[in-house]
Length: 492
Image (cartoon, rainbow, N blue to C red):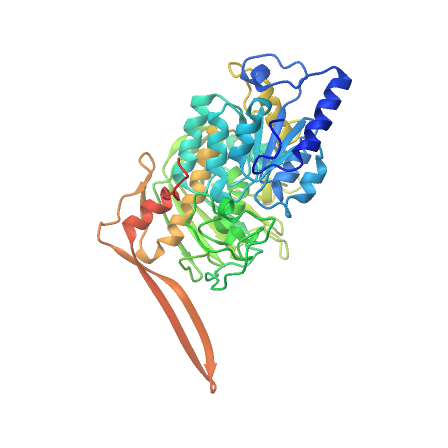
């Protein structure tokens, strides 16, 4: 450990004593990252030294699934929310600022698990990768298209082992979906639908006007991170940040990386050429309660025995669903209660549940196709598959199943759907230039009107509506949604 009492640390005197006493008694030394096998060296202990950043929610779950390794440091801006995880690993150093953690303990950290809100995924992950640390990042990988593109680039440049936390990607279901489609079991696919029951948290919200005091356990400035400054309110954190455009990516960002995953992989989707969206009321602050986004993908190269013609793919959330296909029994839900995906092929229809689980072909429920075992099976957890990759030499590594070379392009498709929703007032299909990350059919002077406030009251039995709108330059908005400007002090 470094010197006690640095800003962002907690209990370092005690922790330093415990660690030094334990090391002396055992006659051991801490293994620094310079001898990690995944960086081209030999690691005698065969255990990674892992730091967690954002450990109050899914980060805690991820760390639990890799607790056979050395959890050496924990970082969270909200120490009340993170207290349970701190208690899980009493010998780990704790911080509020991940940058301070990296300064203090960089030589002791081999890999970083990122479970922060969406808007800080990129900054934490990029800094860790540039420092030579392997990274596991919760979904969605990033808040924006540009950030995803940059992480894919950094993964190539640094050679660290990477993984996005869409755990269904390591499951058997996605492998069955891919192998059945590639084997021609449902023929050519030109139409796909995917849906989720999310949001299960409040959305369609207006910015709070109250300004309560910040809890003493929360560093609000660090929570805001690269986003635009706003006063603290408990409507933003913990957990509810998903609803707010500045911090989260709505229902699409939350579940799209899980549910679109088998569609993206099985159909080798890549970049769409266009997309369009519609939704319940969308405002300047928060994602809508329900939405529909349609993406248009061009013809792609053949996969296995089947051609990949142009395909129309539609996403639904907030309780919206596609039409029920012919042949599905009355009373049977589509997918599971959380969502699913449906591939409409020239020879049949394939349906799977959330995380690509329990796939079946309509009419062949009792006669499923056999697996071709074309894809590598993951015998451990999604997290431990990444741990395995971290320990392998990068020159001969088998990448984790959802490494950034795969998951960053997937994430681009997911978060670009929010462009369709936020720009829907243009009332057209938006043409997408994937190589240059821009919508090509927006004129420089075009504007969109977006609700900024919507009040409804009843006076003497009569309704009173007061809906206010913000008028925004559409091209400038598009550019900022794709690559948002960072607050001073935060950089790409």
